Length: 252
Length: 252
DNA sequence: GCTTGCCAATTGCATATGCAATTAGCTAGC
DNA sequence: GCTAGCTAATTGCATATGCAATTGGCAAGC
Image (cartoon, rainbow over the protein chains, first blue to last red):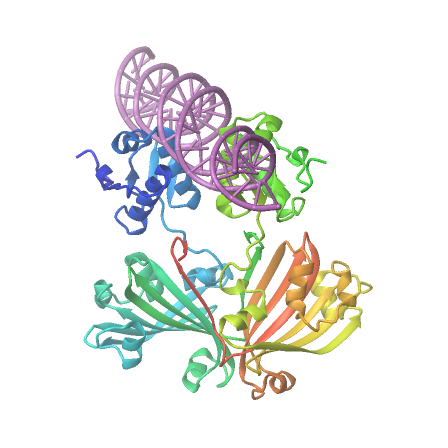
């Protein structure tokens, strides 16, 4: 009734270990990261948490201020505290949206799904993710273009266990990566970056010569240890570079 | 006399803008980052800052606690607060020490300086760093080996303006990158990552075939806007990959 | 209905206070 | 000289208090 936005006060459970402010911080952090409190959820005000947890307002404030500093929540006077949306990207390799990547280059973007196959995972994929061969997966090959020229080739496997709605999706408006970002939760990702020679088929699709060097990004994504998707992005090497800038104490 | 470690209390200057605790935090942060308070320097105790700045202990504490959280200072009861050493590396591309990189692979490491040339910068280099052609630079080509096999080829330019001691250094014990890390300050670095085809000379040095794909990392390093060094690292593509792992809220 | 102004909820900031925990360095005793 | 124990310096944590700033929503007046 009163908690229309769904943040139940009782959900905040302290574990009794360490400083009180840190217990509060970790408890709320866990609720946010595990998705119990979705982005946009109204977090109980300091006074409510204070009464509920038996802590002083300053102690609650300290926990919430830290979480706000970490970007997990957003606070505004009078309106209160809400769970923030996860930041879209952090650093060099965290660019997850290819349309956005192209848009930043100032080039018009389009894409085409070249092939699509539902079915069982290949032995290779099943192996890398410790899947049962009976799990259903969706294979997609997508070509992204900037200014009409091939930008990157995407070869993706989606694990339907975690993303059942993907079966019904046509991926006509939104490329698979962006669609997944909007429709699936993820808690962990791993990137591997390497240089390869373009195979004949890759070269043909990317409009380069076979054997030309390419930057290959392999990304595997999980939600709470359950695999969500795996993708291999192949960038024509001559055309792309990843750039990052930072100082000894972090990003500049 | 009393401040044998050199942290002068008067060095902490507030700028009057924003919350007091944040002014204090930024003031001390600047002293650390700009190297005025070197790593290991004893930071004045809370009571001293409190008296000197006219703030309450809790306010000073708040600033220092935040800085400790950011890793810029280390605090211990009774011993007090000291400036921390900058973290050696942060994430995927921040690995600065190649010996360390090889050691992590569990392989024995060695290196050889293949060529060395003192003199004026080439037009190309002078251009990229906005140098005067009269500035002195040191060109070095170094091959790093893991288990006796070529691991990465390093082509480096050191700007002697910022690192005059480099002229006298033989680089027989320590490769140039590590030597610079220990002997030079830097405040900013930029990485660019791309895929290339090995040239004939690169291929020969790396014991691969000409045209084989390589991962190339170009790193440029500055100290307060003055260039310190520029380096190109060429990794045989088939043999190396960079891996990073994180969640939507940061590194895991 | 529309606007203006007020009230109250909520967070932001700073202070004062007290006690706990840690430990460097000194002191007393052997 | 050596050790055990004490003292005091320093940080860590929690609370209570008060006021400032912001602003959503209501009420009063037009």
